[in-house]
Image (cartoon, rainbow, N blue to C red; front, side, top):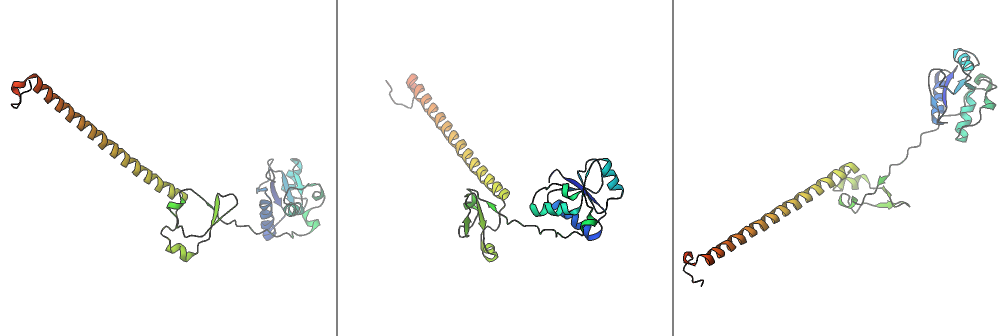
Length: 210
């Protein structure tokens, strides 16, 4: 049904609105105008400008029962049984628009969740081990230290933590290198003083180096 580009003609009011919804629900694409891009024309009567143009463009002309059957079977069905009679001849549209199924939200489980979530929250793991349902009551959620962190928020916090650790590491390395350099300079100065005392004992502090 993804390749179906359909428009309707002859339907009015609530029935037209319902038919458009049914076309979209079964996976087809509805457009208001008739053109060469259209694959189907759902016709109430075999008359009118859209019908005439559809015949010139060899567009498939069907009645609304074809759309209803596609809804019932959940797939595109052959058009042949629905091109011989118009919508007026087969009777009114009877199929109601199916209610939209709302999928429950699932939450991705990150190995860093333990840093952000209250461990006392009840968690139920699914078979894949990658997703979980969070069934915390509103009261429990309000008492939690961390109420609701999005995955993006967690990444930002983790990034800040990593940056802080990296800065601390750089500071420690800097002071370590500085301490080593100071110790090296001190050793070089001591070695220089000892060398001068050996070479010029008369300038020493009174100690006899010979």
